[in-house]
Image 1 (tube, rainbow, N blue to C red):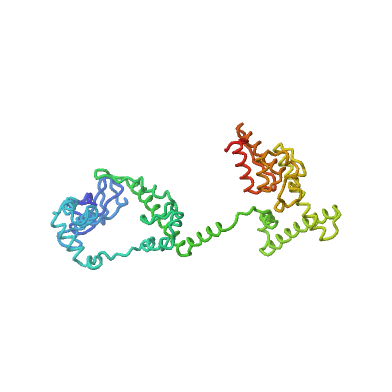
Image 2 (cartoon, helix red, strand yellow):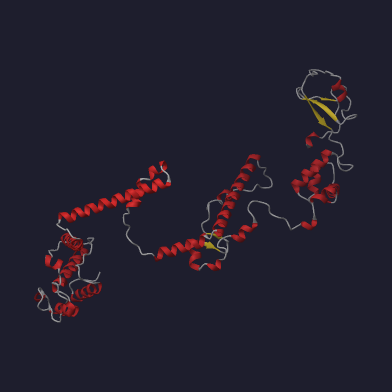
Length: 430
């Protein structure tokens, strides 16, 4: 606007001042350079040089008319407002240099009279309301008061550490969009002697807006967690998981059917899909029961009581087979009598003397005293001694071993036998 200020605008047709009788002039936009024509010449369709009466034109107002106070025309007042916005209230020397036609005192008086004390200031600027501004942005200041945990005293130190809550910084160690600060951390502020392009300024403002949007999303998530008590629910679920014993997962026919039949769920209603899953699970149960009845018939079982005894004996036979298989893999030649009944079906708790048991005469005096004190069958002791010596030899060779213990030994017996063999020099501690 400052480049448009002129002391006088002569008419290109008659040579007189364009603004002598009117506040408008006509500017031809087709002629180069542009021609200024007063309104009487424009009304008379005057032509001069290459200018024709049918050329396109635009109207230009007189920039020297007064708007609010005497001595200040529209152009000067516009420059005053621009300088005030650029340099701030109070920097009257810089503002006066920007206006160029007024001094610092005149600029100060014009701003105070027209915009501070005058009717405009009375309706837009209230001294009593300073410091009582209300934040109307989307991210309310109340969000910081409702951040979770709402009451840190309700949570223990271990729970706060598990959440990663930093009370001094009023934030979590890992936030939503944790890398959001990188949007503004790399923005450089322009120095006093540098002029930034409009594109660079718009790009920086876009980064700031994106960062503010992520901050608002963080506050919304925190408020949602606080309103619905998600923190307490999280710790309740964690405690419930700790109290539950870890059990091996068993195959459930219904869950397997649910996974396989997911693809057809889109073509059925909810009730139809539930009935289908129940039918498939029932089919699997019936097939398993039919196989079980066929196995009873094949083995000559005809009564429910005989079926129960058959299942007990079958489980026992399967366990003995697994024991023999592990012994064979370990390279042990364990007699079947030892594997099936290592104690010969005798209750050793009621036996005082075990010298009559097989294998007792093969033991040394120290081993006899150990077996007698533990009421341990000599063959069972010999089997476990063989396992320990074999593991010791393989370990000294640098081989990876998988310890195998004969059935019928508890943890305390194995520990005492191990310590006895170490003190006797059969094996070394490892």
